[in-house]
Image (cartoon, rainbow, N blue to C red; front, side, top):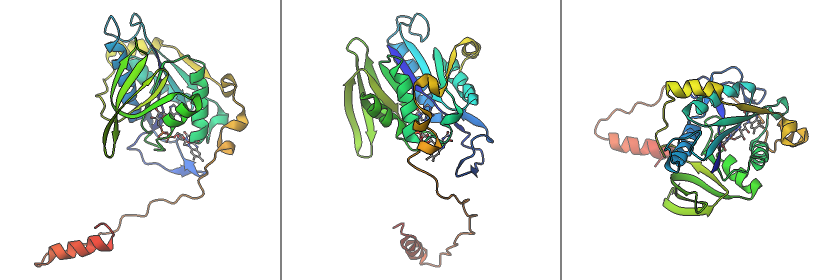
Amino acid sequence: MKIAICIKQVPDSWAEKKMAAGVLDRANVDAVLNDLDEYAVEEGLRIVEANSPTKEAGEGSGHSITLISMGPERATEAIRKALSMGADDAILISDAALAGSDALSTSLVLAEVIKKGNYDLVICGTESTDARMSVVPAMIAERLNWAQLTFAGKVKVDPAAASVEIERVTEFGNQVMNAKFPVVLSVVEKINEPRYPSFKGIMAAKKKVITTMSLSDTGLAATAVGASAAWSAVKDALPRPARGAGVKLTDEGSGGEKLFDFLVEKRLA
Ligand SMILES: Cc1cc2nc3c(=O)[nH]c(=O)nc-3n(C[C@H](O)[C@H](O)[C@H](O)COP(=O)(O)OP(=O)(O)OC[C@H]3O[C@@H](n4cnc5c(N)ncnc54)[C@H](O)[C@@H]3O)c2cc1C
């Protein structure tokens, strides 16, 4: 199997974030591998390990895992972390013309790169913790005209049958769905417990190849990506107002009623 895993570097969830020129200021804040993409990496490794004669990912497994990320040069830090978990190599698409890309452009670029790789399976997280649109996996599948199995809480891959079966987590219960390769899969948080990179993994990751592609390497025109091609624009952004003192309810026998009235007033009941 040839597996690609889409990973994104995002601002640290705990860092204070600021807006700059209508978009999130990502340059001046600590950056990490998107938490939810760690589950995608772990799932890819588990799929390989379950189907490898050596029960290990990497050389000799008969399968390969390539990480794909679009972002600035420093996204290599997040990529190294995922490589140290056990992925084989990586592609970083980095170009000044990509700055300000929206979900449509992001999926366009990722799909274009995926097309060139002849992959059987593409695995994504369900959402990034910075933009939280949760649309990129579905958009990639649509652009490639591949099957999409999204929000997977359980995954079973049968390489001999070239098929994937998932339990899709929905508000109403779990749906069992399956599809033949090639498939775009997105996995939910807590599908697994992502492994910590071992010392051996960290050392090995230093030697793994990260291929950097520019926009022209993808074959896409600068007019198809970036802020000028975005279908959405941030019109305004205001800092969150400071938290008020709150309301104190004193229970003098009618606390329950007061609480109920409060909830009704706030449209919470
Ligand atoms: C007007 C506008 C300007 C913007 N400008 C910028 C900008 O300058 N810089 C910027 O970083 N963002 C920018 N964004 C946000 C950017 O559009 C989103 O990051 C992008 O659309 C992906 O959406 P998401 O991050 O919510 O992904 P989701 O759909 O929530 O992500 C789901 C999964 O898709 C995969 N994925 C998503 N993005 C990537 C990626 N880049 N590489 C690899 N895999 C990925 C991951 O597996 C992830 O778990 C801008 C958005 C708008 C509307």
